[in-house]
Length: 246
Image 1 (spheres, helix red, strand yellow):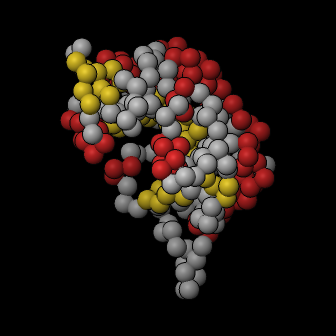
Image 2 (image 1 turned 135 degrees about the vertical axis):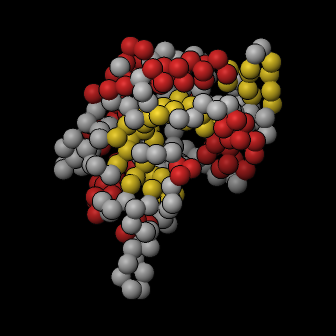
């Protein structure tokens, strides 16, 4: 699965909204921040009006989402959140119907993966990438053994928000991960992201022969012992300037 920057067509599909914080990376969740500004309770998980977007059709019978599109799935919730259990079978059915699309799902609940699968999952759907988030070594050691063993055709490791150094050397990532994505935390209360942590993950990815994407610096970036406050609109640009992406 290539990085989103080179996709011709992409679509955001937030079929339900709302979540519950499960680990350190959730502390300053961007969904919670955005909802707070609108007076919305982010802990209430509800289906959205976009629930059936992938299978909607135009008057001429063609799907509204073009074939070949990359569909970012459930980015304002977690696809495996417990509250969505009653709706997930229908979601999987739509994903299976649109096997001409590519779906990207990011989760902090890889521990719920096996109990949330459709009957025909087998070794995984060819057109679905399941990304696992780890934010520090503790979450790495908790989630990666589950993730590595899970029957998933395409796996991307998301180290974001990066809250501490992570050593991936014991997980043989070169044999089962396609890409490592790294990013700092955004927002006024962002915790620091140290450049040396990013460089360590980059070196491990290069050694494993993996694609690497330094997505964003975060708002509180530490480099060579100096602290930088980086505005939101420059966080992706500054990350690209590091020249680490491959």
